[in-house]
Length: 407
Ligand code: SF4
Ligand code: SF4
Image (tube, rainbow, N blue to C red; front, side, top):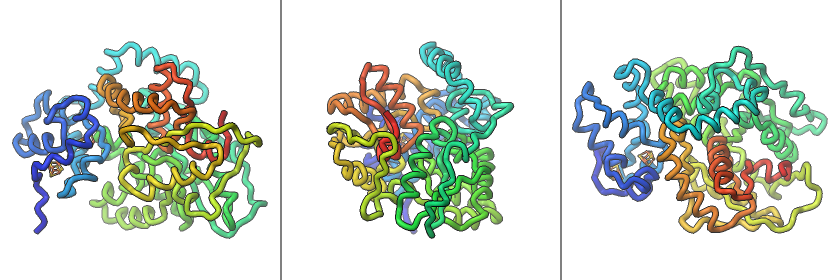
């Protein structure tokens, strides 16, 4: 029988973003596993809560562990106990505490919410972004009328049907990302413009991260249902959404009705950059900038959940390298976590800032014009942290860059 107990080898310590800035052994996978072994189920101190809330669920430890120990799953399980201990959820509590004790964050959120009020109200009541931004559930949450943003281009024709899961940011706050993806996919040989099923919901990652598994499961069922009218491939625009959607079978493993449906759903998932990079020639559809800009230095930021999947690490770089105006530069210390991690940057703003600080220092060292990624959370975090340094570098989704559809 395979031994899945911790070998204490320490491989996880070399990749853990939290350990790298704190130096605290208790915050590594090895340390947390040791604690889980030693404490009784009902003996959860404030120190325990603190240790298990300070995990980004970035999966880096799991990916390098020679015994394939899935520590992030154990952390989420530990968070299930948080509400029982405190009455209303210590992760949520530390989130609120973190926000309340950091007036700068509160002021920033307040300013952002005020400016973006009309737009943010379009976020559905159960959007993970709504949770991440600390917004109350919307009473109205009108849907963006997709047909107004993304004209149905059925006249372009094509035999390959597909459907799209843009994610909350691309669907509700920055539909330009969805528009760009639609243009790119429509440009592929024999591809029809993808449908965007209106019943789709947030992927549920933010709810899962905070230990709210019931809500996460409910959102998974909603999404599986929303895409059940077709068996076409599901193109996903956000890297973190993609990785969470792919975990639906684990999430619904105990539900005999939904587990087979979750398996079938996951088999249809296709991350957008890998779909595009598989084409020959590689697609480019300049929408707004007919003249190619002068050569620009571009950094690609790997979302944590895709960083250890070789194909998904290679595809965005392949696409960027196909653009004649792009000079792709790698960071001196390689890909790193941005510190966003579900609700982590709200629950632990100082720690998140320290983690993103390492990445931002490396980004500034290569002086890019543009930072590109595919994850909504990373986009927001990188934009906030880079802007705070006074950097002029823009942060954009890969699809916007491939279509030159953002300034
Ligand atoms: S999931 Fe990430 S933050 Fe959490 S222990 Fe593993 S490496 Fe560290
Ligand atoms: S890498 Fe795995 S086996 Fe090694 S110390 Fe970390 S959790 Fe234990």
